[in-house]
Image (cartoon, rainbow, N blue to C red; front, side, top):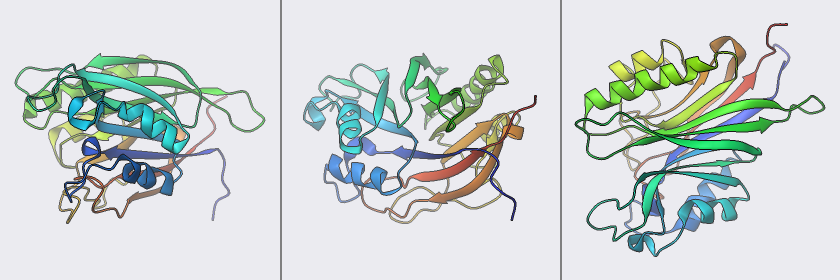
Length: 254
């Protein structure tokens, strides 16, 4: 067994279905309990409501941050998500143990899709023990479920985004609404490593998962070693099961 060379980071991606479980009950505390159970450093959340009347006017990202003791950033995709939402905002969110240096929301390509989608990009300050903190770029996203063209265009955009700063360690997590052998995943794999690649890791539907559409990715490939990838055994709290990856950051070139 090789000795550990670098610090570990635990990443969780979870489509929380606005806190509504497969039992049709709305229970944000249940969502928080799932997150706490795996003590993640970084969390990408999808289908998050903010001040929407359909979910009681709660800022779900802020509430989950409070319940889990994590920092939070929210990325709006829609002002009024659907006819039943009655106002508020909807999108993706990041929860993290790490200090957030900055964050910004970018729109994903939208031509034929069901609704506008975004990627939330954050630069985090990662301390490696006694060493100086290093920047870590984290992307949380949710690809469209209706348009294959938009999913492919979104994948190409994320390849370009990560290429802007090729040396900075980057992690990407989200619901990509695409199978491992699909064109969007093949496109991402041209520059991103995929945690658990080559294994079956079904995440949807939560009650009896039959396909993987949720992922954790990393780059540059040579800087990361995947220690563990698994689907969290939680069939009720959402219509997706969360996917978790533990990665080790390897020393860079000197």
